Amino acid sequence: MNVEDILKTEKEIPLKSRTLIHFLLVNNTITEALSAALKPYGVSLQQFNVLRILRGQNKKPASLATLNERMVTKMSNTTRLVDKLLLKGYVERKVCPSNRRKVEIRITKEGLLILKKMDTSMSEAEDNVLQNLSDQEMEQLNILFNKFE
Amino acid sequence: MNVEDILKTEKEIPLKSRTLIHFLLVNNTITEALSAALKPYGVSLQQFNVLRILRGQNKKPASLATLNERMVTKMSNTTRLVDKLLLKGYVERKVCPSNRRKVEIRITKEGLLILKKMDTSMSEAEDNVLQNLSDQEMEQLNILFNKFE
DNA sequence: AACATACATTTGTATATACAATAGTTGTAT
DNA sequence: ATACAACTATTGTATATACAAATGTATGTT
Image 1 (cartoon, rainbow over the protein chains, first blue to last red):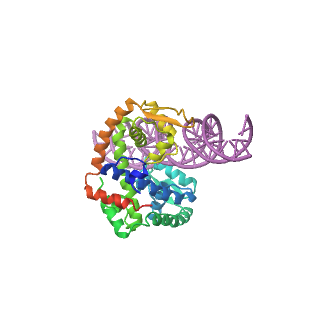
Image 2 (tube, rainbow over the protein chains, first blue to last red):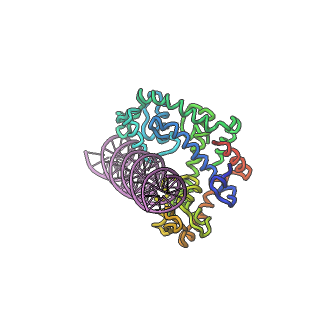
Image 3 (cartoon, rainbow over the protein chains, first blue to last red):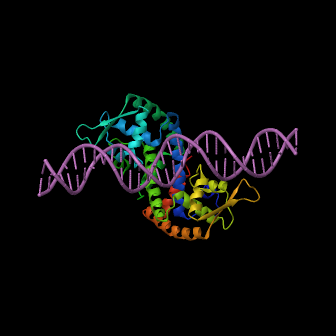
């Protein structure tokens, strides 16, 4: 299926616009698939991302700045994102004793438990989205992606 | 710059996840660049998209359904998107005489005028984002993008 | 100690989006 | 003609996000 058909337009789109539009279209496909996989757990992609970062810390706490630095999609408001996870009991937050400007955020046991389940669903969704691509093609994509500013 | 560096993580990310994360990262780059180009005009990417569709109609009106069908990123609420453009005077909307369930949306003279200016800015932004890619590489990307479900 | 500056997070506000519910219109079958 | 289902857009509500301003804390300078 080509871009013109998807957008139901007669005229041919120039290569550059076409590439970018195609990019955005595939991005929609990907985020919809991943979000749908997380839907049963009631968390957004961003919240999932935060939980994964926290698990990667191995007990070490993370500050908001750390989270922001490592998030795939940077947020202007990580505070409220963590609030949501707090409400669900998946993270805990306390003021950092050594520097009281900072907060220490950790994933809870419940967070780890639910995250393990999410991992399975996410992995399935990833496989599904990428099922028509070979390893070589993915490598190729990664190389091409590096050329974007 | 590789993905691991961008996300400041030590562990190597598996190819599939890596590809998808890289995709999302580049998507952020693209949408930020394009949105920034539209910022001076006070319209969002979606609003710009609607204006372009309307211009492509050549005087023929479009219904909300038509807009939705042709938008790059489908919206659950095109009504309010058009509301914004109405307020700015870039489009006009009236009830379709032959089928009063539908509305007829057209771009105005002011809309066409401002859109012409936006085109220049957008084209510059596109060139900028894609400056490191050859035509062949873009073609390659389009082929790979077609492999996504 | 007093002050200015930088830092880290939180809050306020406006806008955007998703999803569900509603309202009005049309076509069709009876 | 009437009832009913399908269609199209609008509205309501909750949540998400962007951006700017405010708060509280720490650090450096005099």
